[in-house]
Image (cartoon, rainbow, N blue to C red; front, side, top):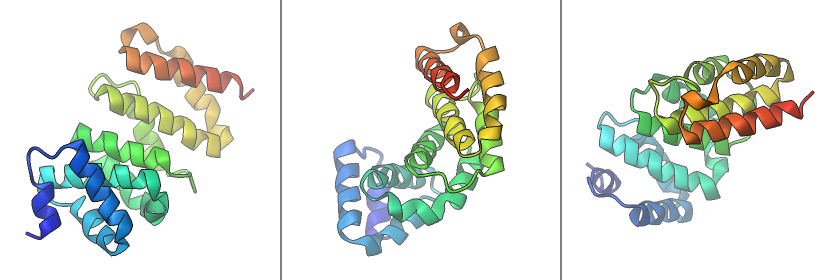
Amino acid sequence: MNGLEEILSDGRLGVKKVKALADSVEASPDMFDVLYGLAFSEDERVSWHALWVCEHLCDNCPELFLDKRNELSELVISCGHDGKRRILLNILLALPVDEVRVGLLNFCFDNMLSPARAIAVQANCMKLALKLCEKEPELLPELKCIVESCEPSFYSKGVQSVIKATRKRLGKKR
């Protein structure tokens, strides 16, 4: 176990330490490959914490993740941990859309209103679906149909807010 992996395996990793790790990786970009590799660790805690650091790193250095979009998209679809999914979706939301990844868009459509998903995953899926559809405007009517046909009162306040904002943005795209 290397030093970074040992830190990430700590059960009480807090936001201060996460931000400090992100700052360290930003200052020493050669550490990025190690951190990013740990995001795929078999140890759930290590991978979750590595992704948390990546999320903070992406705020200041999104360019580090541009060539990772395919891998991150595949990981968000395949992972079974809603905490990791939320973070992965946040990272993808922070990056510019270079192409519409059909699998990712389908994942977002399937999960943005799914009560089986965490509130943050639902909300982030809807935001990302909108961002992807804006890249390919012919997809906007499908998103609009889904969002217009849902009953917001069935969802949490967080998801209701995203539904309202999405409807508003879609209304301006006529």
